[in-house]
Each structure stands twice: as structure tokens, then as C-alpha cells.
Image 1 (cartoon, rainbow, N blue to C red):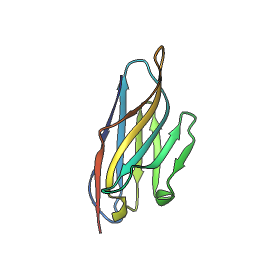
Image 2 (tube, rainbow, N blue to C red):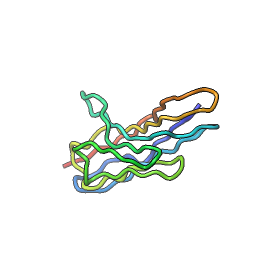
Image 3 (spheres, rainbow, N blue to C red):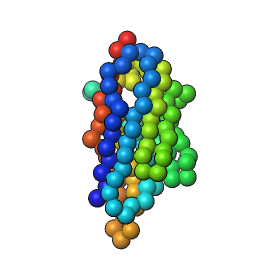
Length: 118
């Protein structure tokens, strides 16, 4: 099993910056890709940013030039600048991993709330 633990959410003001963290733990796994998703009330979960094992990145249009995804081994970060009220959502960490002898799996964190007031 692989566990993902997010941290860093909070109550912010428009224009603030915030960094989310996600730590992956477990035994014998290789991360293929990691990403951040978010789900606002009444809306579907959407991709915010993703990073492949090779370092390639992909961002939702709504966060380009404001959010930056980064990774340090089994830890992943989302630097969020110039926050807007529409960024309010529960943010989830996602990882696609390969576990030797078991195959490929996808895991989710428990989510961290980000609320941005105008």
C-alpha cells in the first residue's frame, strides 16, 4: 500500500500565496506521475496540475502562471500564488505508482481545504 498525506490548506485572502504539500509513503514503489486535483462544492473533481516522472508538467488553464507544481523524491508541492475566490476547493493529491510484483496503482490523499475570501 501507498499512503498520500496532504498538508498546507487554509483560509486565505484573494491575492495571497499558499503552498500545499503531499508526502507519499509505503514500501517498494516507484512513482510514475503525481498531480493535484480539486473539487469545489457542486462541481466535479478537476485536474489542477500534474507532473510526470520525467518532470513534464501540465496545468489547468485557470491556474497557469499562478500555480507551480514541483516534486522532491516522494514529496510533491503546489505553490499557489495570486489566489482567487474561485480557487476555493478541496485539493487532493494523486499518485500513479508501480509496485514491483503487484502492478500499477492509483492513490488519492484525503484532501485539504483551501478557502479564498474576496
